[in-house]
Image (tube, rainbow, N blue to C red):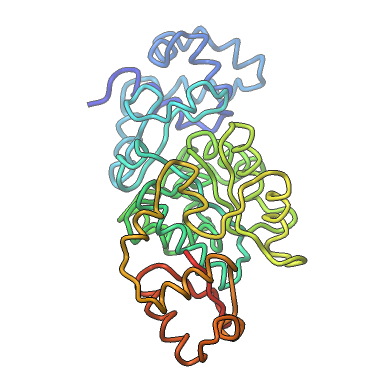
Amino acid sequence: MWTAEEKSYIWLDSFLIDPAFKNALVKEADGAANLVRHFARFEEVFAKKGKADEYAKMQKTLDGDRYFKELTALYEREGIACITRATDGYFSAWKEMPDAPCVVYVKGDVGLIKTRLFAVVGSRKIKDAYKKSGGEICEGLAEHFTILTGAAEGGDEVAARAALKKGKVVCVLAGGFHEAPKDGGDFLREAGEKGAVIAVCPHTMTVRNYSYERRNRLMAACVEGALILSAGERSGALTTAEYATKFDKPVFALPYPPNDATGVGCNRLIKKGAYLAENLIDITARFGINLEEKKSSVPLTAEEKQVYERLKESGESHLSVLSQALGVPVFKLAAILARLEVKGLVAKSGGNRYLAN
């Protein structure tokens, strides 16, 4: 059952006016319910903003409760839950933000937005090797956090699909749910079924020039940290990292070879102070999560231990280089590495290259 305050926020947010203006109206009225009760008093405020036509349209919907019933019936048909600023579970980090959404629209597990959140984003262009290593990190992170990501192909999809193996992912749309098919692939459907998809805009709002930056800023505000899987020179993923830094959240980035266009943004972040993330432990150790103890409990043969320790020291290594360094034949080393992969201690990064998790 909706409270008067929640109903008023849902009504207000259904109109396509600036979110900062909506919040200013609520503040001046001392509450959303008061705004609805005394809406006639705000005609002049709308007129001064050049929104007289919008005021007239909104005023007309307050004649009876038909508009609200049709609005909530639409959300119910589409399986959308509404978390208003007056609802328990609304992101506390957003409450003081001038353009925070009046309502968060959720498809899927509403409870996930109350869990520990970690942002993982990446540009649309990401190479297979980084999809694999990044996905493995995300799957591991999802054991400790709910992964918060965007809704685009590429890095966002890698993060979402990996986290979905644990069922702990929240994808954030830049527009309303009406725009969702244009904003992502089929992984969004799965996220809505096993995790959650949220929109921070009214249902029919299209994506605008500022939508992605606002979405990325909101994401950065409510997470404990952020990981950038890939980022070109001007990737939007860098915006999430910049805002996370402003909010004093730790930022992590996968390292890329020099001159790799798909990772130049990641390397730049590391140069500016972001944490280099070659594996899951590089991230979890910053949050007091000791995975080394867990790894030490995995039984290893003398050969497996020798190979694993060598990879930890050298970082990513080619099979032939590792074979020469250890004096172990390639065919035998490949079998050892396969066993270490099964034990979750080693990952193949493509092209017969391996790295320690």
